[in-house]
Picture 1: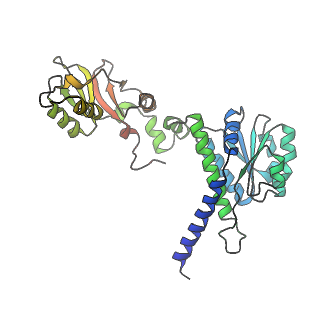
Picture 2: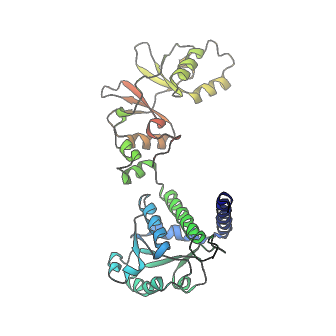
Picture 3: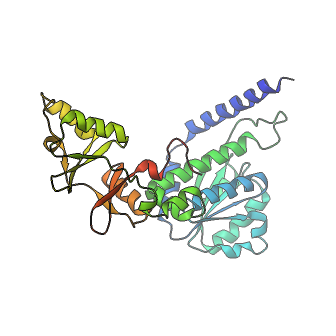
Length: 320
């Protein structure tokens, strides 16, 4: 057997099922996102077996992106772990068939506690689906398993639906990279964001003067490769900034560029941050002002460096 071709067939089969599932998504996802967003408790995810493993991953992703969540094995829930659940919580029950006894057994106790219930199931007409407030349909027509028995495409569909829910909630909460760093202090991005600005800034500051002519401004911006340059007066005080955007606007505005001086098209003033601030503060400032560089100052308010978004996040090599 050619396992290269067989593997490609399995990929295509799962991709096809995911596309069909995506086409079925409707207003229920909006309702689920808003219910979880408005909750004063946590999101408890329950499953057993392989769907339990997927549920554990979904819960972990949610918890690390701003949605308080825990995973509880449904079988263990009936032997004391229901104590982890409170009436303010929402419980997401995962069952492909919607008829798993371990899942159905927890429904009545959860309702008695007072939780809101959501189902993620491959059978939107199942017993489970009828017992909950909202249903996310993860139904597929066929497993990748040649016997159509081992959970394969169905678990993939459940995982992808969980990822969609996670990302929708991230966007609903306005979750940002600095928030991610707070929950991931042991990761590379987390460690970087809790460092100081001075640890990551460029100290070779691009510099021109008010009287610097246009072509020399372009050279300095290009030479330092930061997409900007500071502008200084005769007293060597930073008074403005010129960015790539300022250069493009100058080209459109002025007919004669040869004798154009920096003072004629610079942006007066500039966004700045103290070198001892955390990178989280810098990232928040960049996001708020929709800029990609910040001037870094010392306690005497002298420019001592430039911080670029690329000092914080390397977009070519994403950090896990």
